[in-house]
Image (cartoon, rainbow, N blue to C red; front, side):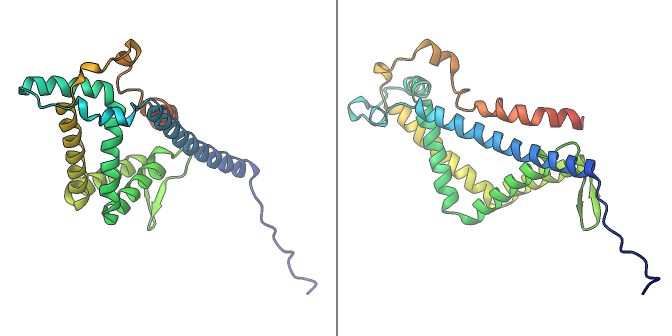
Length: 218
């Protein structure tokens, strides 16, 4: 027993541990910023929606006399009720997905794959390894693109999304064509802003997160 070799203590690299911790904190911070930006944009967009009673005021509905008049009504009503219309289309999509659990699960998995395998991955993260094979960022991106194409175009998920979008757009167009927009007035700021404010998280928080990572990959 006296000649037994001393126990070997595990040696950790403080710099490597600190770098791993920093990368994990940066990834979690990016996720929080992304969802916080989406939540804030949706909340501010819904705060600017028109009153729903104004949307369904029966006294403002009449049959258009021609196709050109219906088109003009749709365009004016869309400019005024755009937030309400986006909400209606989103609600139709949500109901359609909730009534099709398979499509909801597949889309959730696809979104998680894009987020954690590409969007929120840092340049210093180790390469993805599956079944002993190492995948580069380009190979991971190619796999995600192919998976998205297969899910959207070769499964029932695509038909569910297209059907829901068609129903939502049909509701919006029917309302826009039947509602008389004579009593609707837009402020100059609203006319210049358009629908971009409601979707600003794509150019706001998301761009701030993804741009440094894309630049690092390039």
